Length: 240
Image 1: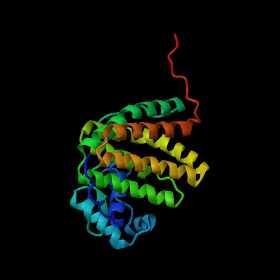
Image 2 (image 1 turned 120 degrees about the vertical axis):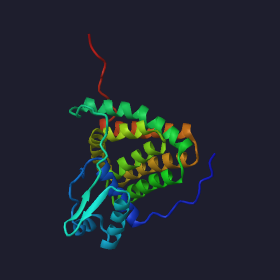
Image 3 (image 1 turned 180 degrees about the vertical axis):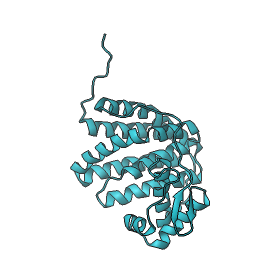
Image 4 (image 1 turned 135 degrees about the horizontal axis):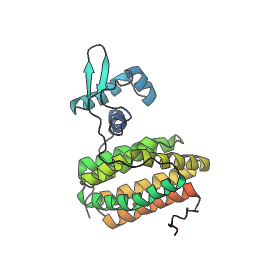
């Protein structure tokens, strides 16, 4: 079992950086697009301009954005997925996506428990902090939810898991939005249950318990699917 080091303090600038990075990496802000004005972003995220600028300075240092004198900031790199999937059009497609995620993300969690380092765990923690803040405000944040699952894929130290998650971003988001709506109908209880599931996955990864991390991820995705489908899955057997 790995000894868990003291959790690094997550600053507001870290959270804003993580949100902007997610939007760039999932293509919401494509390459060469101008970012929204600083005053708009600071209002949206509920932070001061200096906090926002600290986050953007980090993105600039990493080469993800650049500035034009008097014209604002622009995206330099959009991280596009190399794999393509057909669009989600039916409930059956959402169910199939969950089936794929059960295999993909359970193994990613297993590997992350064995292979993560402090930086990878800190990225998981930043996403978990966003989920915790949203739960405290009785909100469901699909972007923070996806960031958590993406951080685990990255912690597996296998680029194929990360690339596949990026390719599935829009597909996963459909299920997350619908799942979030079902959670909101349950009020605080449902949100707290999901936060507890995420927290348990993070702890298993931090402690190097790969089998437990995989089982917890599998259970989390099954619970999400079952909340969405009400326990009644679609029969996907092919007919003669």
